[in-house]
Structures are given as C-alpha cells and as structure tokens.
Length: 321
Image 1 (spheres, rainbow, N blue to C red):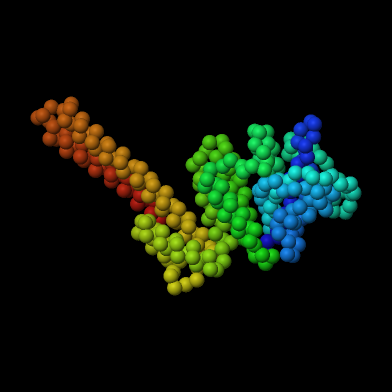
Image 2 (cartoon, rainbow, N blue to C red):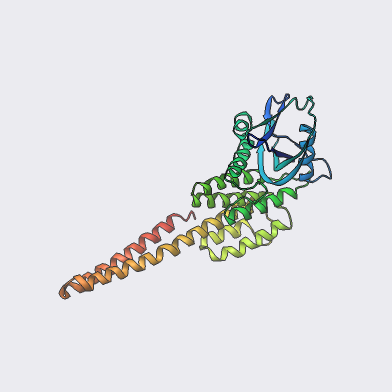
C-alpha cells in the first residue's frame, strides 16, 4: 500500500494583540485543521504546501522554516503530512466551499483547543513555545546534534519518496523525534537519546537498494566489535551472499545498538572494580595488623573476584543465546 503524501503550512499573521495562526474547518471531516493537501505529480513538497495554503485560505504565504511532520491513518490508509512555518504575504478574499467552509485567525492557545489532530496540536505548541522564547521562526530550532542530524536524515528520505514508495517507518520515526525533542527539553537526555536511536532504526524500514545492501554491509562490519552471540546473530540476519530485507536490517541495527550500550556499560563498570580492589588492598595495609594481614589480603582479593563474577553473571543473563 503506497503512502499518501500531503503537505501543509502553519501560516502566521502578526497582529497588534499578538501572533495569529490560520485554521480551516472541513465540513466533510467535520474538523478543524491546518491547511494541507495532496502533492500533485511533478510538484515538490514545498510547492505543494504553498499551493494548498493559497487554495484553502486564499492567502499568499512564504515558507520560513520546516515545522515538522504528522502521520495519521484514516480508514486504514497511512497519510504522512509535512508542514512548514509560513509568514503571511497577502491575505485574499476567502470564499467558503465544499472542501473548506470557514477560515479563522486565532491565537496559538485557541488553536490548540480547536485543532482535532494531536499531531497538528503538537506542531503548533512547539512553534508557539519557540516564538514565546524570543526565537525567530525562521531560525533553526535549538536541539542536540544527534536529534538534528537524525531529523535531517529522515526528512531527506521523506522528501525523496516517489508516489509509489510506501515510506515504511518514516512517519512514526518523525513523530518519535518530536517526542525525543520534548524529552531533551525537560532534561531527560538519556530518554531522548534512546528515542532518537529508535527513530533511526524505524527509518531503516524504508531503505531500498543499493542503500539497503550498503547498510547491511556496514552492520556486519560493526558487529566485529560486539560480543560473539551478537556478532553471530547479526551475520545470521544479514548473510553476505543474500540480499537483505529492510526488516532484517532493522533488527540487526537494534542488536548493534544493544551491543554498543552493553560495551559502554562494561567500560564504565570495569574501572570501578579496579578502584574497589585498590581500596580493599589499601585498607588491608593501613588498618589490619601485620599478623592478620595475609588472611585479610586474601579476603580482599576474593571480594574483588566475587564482584567481577557478579558482573560477568549479569552480562551472561543479558545474552539471549
């Protein structure tokens, strides 16, 4: 099933009482939404966004920045919408029709109350918060480098979609990046990084040849630095003599990420065992009488070995093989 591609805009108008955003009412869907519509053949996403805004609001607008993406599935047909922030250039005379019967210019707070789609509410909320902080809508939105890089990579894939491409995983990946941005904003950096990694893996489901085989080869190479069972699992998923599937690449990437997280944990915990052993030895020589020092030394060594054994046991328990 091909993904339905739409483009739209968050159109902003400056007013004495503050910024206003354009909302449209669609009688067929009986909802309030941002202006948007399908991309015509031979049209770019940006061209479609500007055209749809003009057709549905009678307003000419200029794109200032990329606002984000939203995905929804009415009647089991996936629809991916890319939105751009736009500045009003000329306001035309709006005429009600069958597609759009009402146009309102409202404050961001009212827009959040009226909009029916949560994805659109999230985009307006983010843009309004950014404007309230004094940051111009045309400026890049501040975000960690890993989030910005992931968003640029996934948006590039979305923009390269043809009309026949399903774009599996791209819509959910973009939504996950929005959730990751919210996590970073509230200081949950570890959660944000995990969501960015998951979004990157979801986007792999959209890969096609030759990029699919190149990514599979890279994963096989990266598996050399992982544990034996993870290396075997990745190479079983991605045999060198077979064409990989997007699902296999996605699973291999998840194994790779888990392996790298485990390696990072081991590299952090190993020095702690070394420090604990040194502290135990220091205690033996400083506080324990010479006559009892030999037995205490053995106890310290045995304690350090026991700690290492516990760490090894935990790593084995994390090995599903």
